[in-house]
Image 1 (cartoon, rainbow, N blue to C red):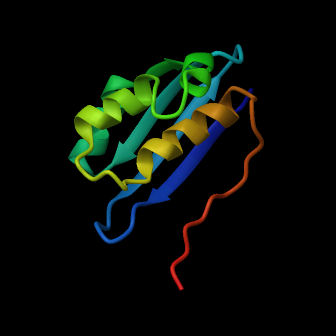
Image 2 (cartoon, rainbow, N blue to C red):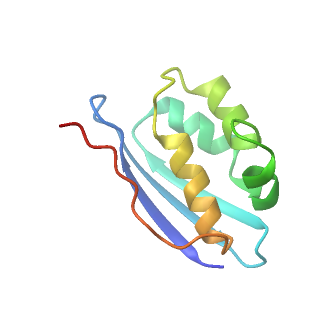
Amino acid sequence: MADVKVKVSSGICGMETIIKASCDDMQTVLIRTETDCVQVMRLALAVAQVDAMEELFSGFGKGRIMEAAEVNIRHAACPVPAAFLKAVEVAAGMALKKDVHIIFD
């Protein structure tokens, strides 16, 4: 269980997002989000509190975060929904902090 801060630079759109997730009981995760992206902010408002077990073990593409992303995020390749899941996973104590990279050569 931890307080987590994740910074996302989404790519060519130039939007930056900061996700802060905290959890005291290995299950209920509180999420606070700072972003310039209207679509990501709508997603963030829909998932300000989530159940880590439901988010991480409902199956790929399922759970409230991905359902809210499907409704609010227009760009299918947006990396922010995955970053929300990674923040939840670490905040709930189900994974260690490790950066994720997508690098074009």
